[in-house]
Length: 434
Image (cartoon, rainbow, N blue to C red; front, side, top):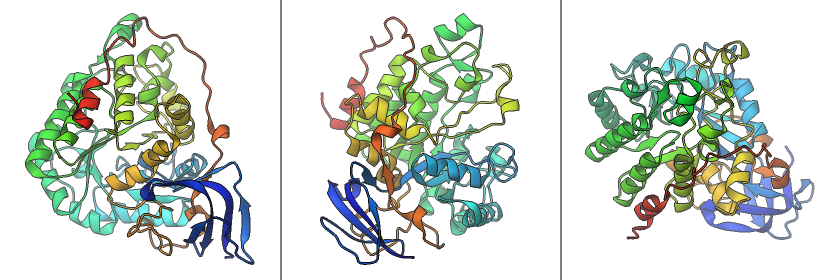
C-alpha cells in the first residue's frame, strides 16, 4: 500500500493537546509524521482543506445482535453503520443469542469481526451466565479471549452481592464494569419516563429513582472493591450529581451520555411513536439539562450511542408491546455537533475528546490515530486494534463538520421545563466550588 499524505487539514488530537493546521503522513497504517509542509514522493494525496482530521471515534456501547439475532443486525452491517457515522472502533454488548458469557462466544465475535467488519470491533463480556444475574460468567477466560469490559447491559444485576463479587473479579483482571443502572422492581412494566406525559398518554411510567438507586449502590460497591465502575447511558440529574461527587472524592467512577438523552426530552415524544421508546427513557428537560451540564463540567467521560436496532416488524408494534431501543451510529456526531458545539456549550476539541480519547481512557487504551506519547504515538500502531491487516479503515477519520450537522423540527417545549436550577451540583462536584 502506498503512503497516504493528508494535506492542509485541521488536526485535532486531544491526547496530545493538538489543534492546528497540519499535514499527516501515514505509511503501512502507521502515522509516521505530523507537521506543516510535509512531502512524500509517491504518496497518495488527500486534500483536507476545510476539513477536520481527528483520531478515530470509539463507540463503547453498541448492540450488534450477532450471534443469534442477525435479522436485526450483523457485525458487518453494524460496523458499516459505525464507519458511516465516523466511528473506527465499536464495543459490542453481550446480549446476543447465546449471550457472550464465555471465551467461545467472545472468540466467535472477534473472528467474525476480522472477516467482515470495516471497523475495529471489541466484545464486552457478560457479568453473569446468560446475563441472568445469578452466577458469575467466565470473566478470566473472556479477558484472555479479548473482552475489554464486562456488563449485563439491558438486564441489570439486581443482586448486590453478585455485583460486589463481579467487581472484585473485574478489578483483579483490570476490566471496567459497565452497568445499565435500573432497579427492575421500580421500573417494572414501565414504558416511558414517569411524570406528566405518561399520565396524559395513558402509559406506565419509569421513575428516575429506578436509575438513581442503582447508581448509588454501585458507587458504594466501587468504594468497597476499588473496581472501575462505568455508568452506561446516564439520564437523570441525581445520577449525574452522584457521579460528579464520586469523581471529586477520587473513586474510579466514569459515565457515558447518549445524544438522545442530552438532546431530547419526554416532551419531544410523538404520541405512541415507538421510535421514541428506549431505556433509559427520554427524561425531563431538567434531567437532559443536567446531563449537558455534566458534559460541560467534565463529569461525563464519553459520548456513546447505545445503538440498538430491531426489525421493523417488532419495533412498529403498539407502544406497550414494542421493544426498547433505537439506532444511533450514523446520527450521533451530527446530533452532538448541533446540540453541544454549534450552541457554544463545548468546543469542537471537547467533542472530539468525548468521542475518542474519553472512551479510550475508560477502556484503558489509546484512541485510534492518537499521538499521545507512550500510547498511540507516531511510529506505533494503536494497541486497541487487533492483529489484522491494516488498511484505510485504520486511519484517522476525516470529518467535514458542516455536512454532518443534523436539523430537526423545532418541537414545543413544556412550559417551565428549564426552571430547574440545574447544573450547580454537578459543577460543584467536579470543581469543588462551594
